Length: 440
Ligand code: SF4
Image 1 (spheres, rainbow, N blue to C red):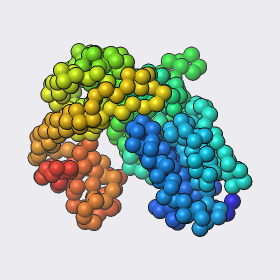
Image 2: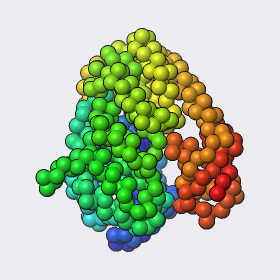
Image 3: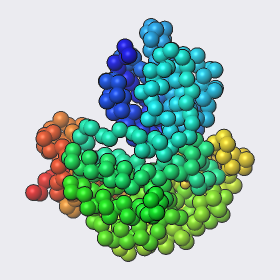
Image 4: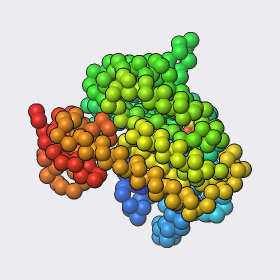
């Protein structure tokens, strides 16, 4: 293969970012490709798309248009489109953009080295669902990262009426218990201190191979026992499947960070039912109360959709009241509803006017920010344990790390501190970060 450089543009969700990292690492090991920052330097350009939000789904065509001049300059340039939009619109992409050589789905990642070799000679579409192969076949990480993402479950079968994931990522498939532990052991031996377990719904993890039932909680107890692992994060948990054994794991394992991301989407039972979320506002409150009982200061963040079909002012008020009751923390995300093709909710139309959605999202985000800032303020002068992950964005004389509740803390120091867990005192609270001072 005469190709030596690779550029990846990633859209959307955390799962996609993780997939892009894996693609880069796999293609570096298997084909010796070097990752470059700009499309102009690359022999292969891959677009790893996301169709969860309408904006991201539409962007791919304008981005493909933008790189057209490069294809005229470089005769052997390979262009690939992967991810969820690829699954939904493979044929359209092929027809509309003749210089796309390869379209691949999220489940074909592990086949990429072969696909890229073939794509030099012919145009290829590979969007089959073979998730279990993908999860078990990705190469083990070889590079050192202070904090590393580990996929444990792919896809989803809950069919929330607004969501495209079950159609583009397929039904949920859990990776084998042994394969996950193997990866975490390798990471820990390489010096990784924080393990971030990833999946559309991590708490639906279930490995029933070899007559053994292993749940997320079983995985957490085993990972917490691996020497070198100091912190465990998880994204994302579904409120309807947050079982008692998982709450007990939060009680027993201090290595699980004091933060949980628990997407509620709406505080109105009518809307939740139409969304097919399978819990009520009361169920959600019971769950967060149970978590607060065992961890009184636990930070809870969430996702919200405003302007879901037929959401009334009263429904929206229910959402605001829930926010007031729970006082959600940083890392909460809110979106204006947009119908996604194929989904059940697309049949409801989009009756809430845009100006109403805009008004509601403004009110919601202002309220979320109020609680986020109050929590940040309450952290002033407290001692926080942070994992240093890199140099600070704004100063070369500082490094930065994250608290358990996802605050960036900048401290004086050099890059030799990267990878260290440090106790710091928060000495200043800024709007998007904290300033800290090491106390050990
Ligand atoms: S639980 Fe619902 S929102 Fe989450 S991925 Fe599955 S279908 Fe989508």
